[in-house]
Amino acid sequence: MIHSIRLCINHSTKIRKLEPGDAQLRFEPGYNILIGPNGSGKSTTLKAIASCETCTLDKSSNKDQVKYITTETLNPVLGGAFSSREQMLQGIRAMFQSHGQGVLDSLQSQRHGGETIILIDSPETGQDHENSLLIHQGLLKIAQEYQVIVATNSLLFMRGGNVIDLGEDYLQRLVQYTGKLAVELGFSGH
View 1 (cartoon, rainbow, N blue to C red):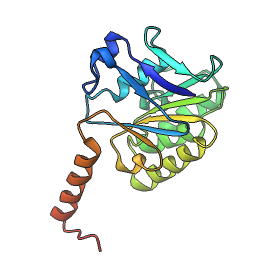
View 2 (cartoon, helix red, strand yellow; view 1 turned 90 degrees about the vertical axis):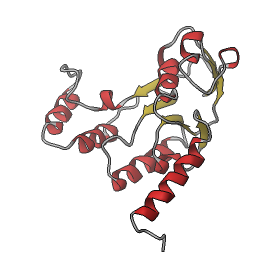
View 3 (cartoon, rainbow, N blue to C red; view 1 turned 30 degrees about the vertical axis):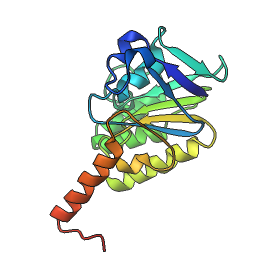
């Protein structure tokens, strides 16, 4: 489990909310959600956790392994080469599916390789509400056994975990905007 990350100068300057001298984020066991407007540093934080040798991770154990999942790595058509028969079949199926269905199919067929920490960037990409609910439920289930850190702008994925707001009161503003939009569209909430 990752308790915290102290970001290097390169990554800390890309996260608006953090001061370069105090560029530390804390995580909880289970489900963690990075939120904030575009450009606030959600994906930057995940990339730093996954691969930066200069950032300092405070982990429970050096044996903790990280799996970093992005919409690009979930799209089986991208990348060209397949490392297994399953990936090849998934890539062929994805050619005849919507992007959202291809991503959902990829998420459902992820294999466990000994990871204890799962990072996932924008799991809502290309998903309708029903598929987003299924993905969120799956992530909460995974978080019962592993640590999950998600970067999202979807209110649906912000439930049930430790919210880390990289914006200035982003969650509050998002809820207000969503409420205003519902009123504009004629939904009174009844």
